[in-house]
Image 1 (cartoon, rainbow, N blue to C red):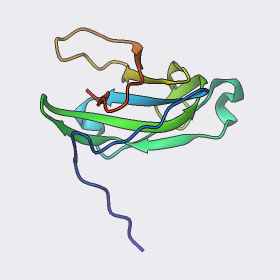
Image 2 (image 1 turned 135 degrees about the horizontal axis):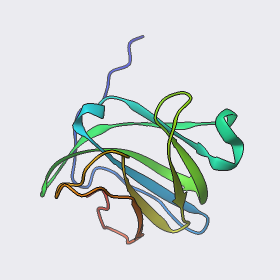
Image 3 (image 1 turned 90 degrees about the vertical axis):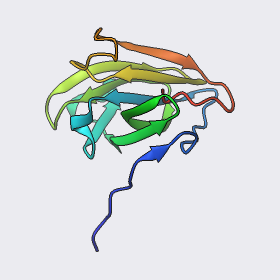
Image 4 (image 1 turned 135 degrees about the vertical axis):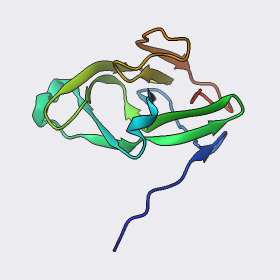
Length: 130
């Protein structure tokens, strides 16, 4: 059976449940990563830790098009973001009750500046996938 990749998402099409001990990650990426699955794993487990992946998708919102992978329902803690099977790309902290927004390393922000990650407060009805 062939698996079909989902098309672009639209504003409001992603629902994230966060709470005590559970957060979420929105990983903003360059367009050339569209269609790629990017993995994260608990930092404490090292390279052999169980990994979770998410597909980078085109995200269409009222402010334009961006590309992101969304990881809902992530246990609070420190995570390794993997560039490939063996190469870590970054360390990210997920806080309970928050959506963490992180820009793929080596990916300039729309204004051309390099960005790290920042936690966004979890607000009901707020689209954090900028």
